[in-house]
Amino acid sequence: MINFRYHLVSLTAVFLALTVGLILGTAALNGPAIEAFESNIQSLRDGNEQLRAQVEELEADLDDDQAFATAIAPSYLAGKLTGKSILVVALPGADTAYVDGAVEMLGYAGATVSGRISVLDEFFDPANTDTLGDLAEITTPDTVTTPVTYDGVTAMSYVLAAVTTGEAAGTAVEITPADITEVTTGLSELSMLTVETAPTGVADGVLILSGPGSTDSDAEDRNTGVVDFTTAYAADDPTVYAATTSTGDGNPIAMIRTDYADIVATVDNVRKTQGQIAAVVALADFVNNATVDHLGIGEGASGLLPDAA
Image 1 (cartoon, helix red, strand yellow):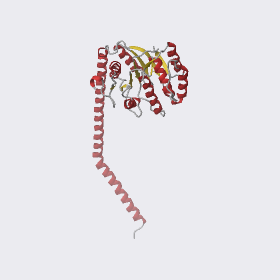
Image 2: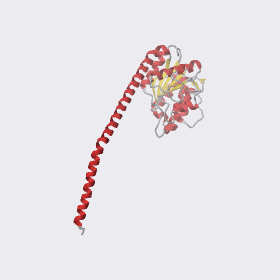
Image 3: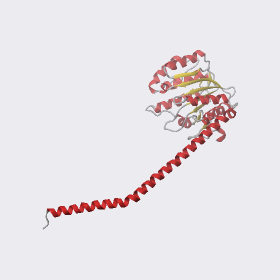
Image 4: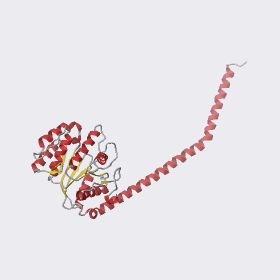
């Protein structure tokens, strides 16, 4: 007769056998499994070390390239913009270091900086379009007629371009120092502009330096505003738009290369010395030869420099 004690002994034997089997199986597999795991870990470590070494080598090469570019810049750029007055405009995202670098390159080329201004984030904020429109209406010189538009960025860009270049829609207009001061002071009081070097109201060319473009919730409006601002200057004088990159949805440089490639020259790597040189070369090519270059390393660029295209 099979009783409860028999069942208990049987079940205990079964669980004991399973436990022994798991222990033996684990012990048998542990060696190969651990060895394989450790081998994979070591392989990943070796791969990471190799990639790290490659990155360090590339960074060293890049530093060498930039050092070489810095060394040859004075002789390479010499005389390319002698006697030319260039307005320098920094947009949101433009780091002071590479704006200063570009100004230094303009000096090597023999150019005179006829003004240096920085346009701030507030200028391109869609919430401020009415404020800009009102300011444009009260600061427009008598010699300038603004286009009919409900967009404050478009209207104010037109006025700012006119007073800082002495032209409106490509036609020379009379601009007084008071006109320049009224516009720049009005924008400065609204925290939309800072003036590093007061514009003279004369420009043979315009160098606009920018960051990568906006990516916030108002990015489309802001980036479109940057393009409108740039084309307002391009209507007056040869203009180069030099940014840090051409990547990203809605990037202004990508829009310019698509829609305004014939009237605005572009450079997409201005953070580096090579890009700053390219920006000045592109401006010289535009001012002296009416040639519109698109330089850099991104999509739509023909080469690092015109000679390399």
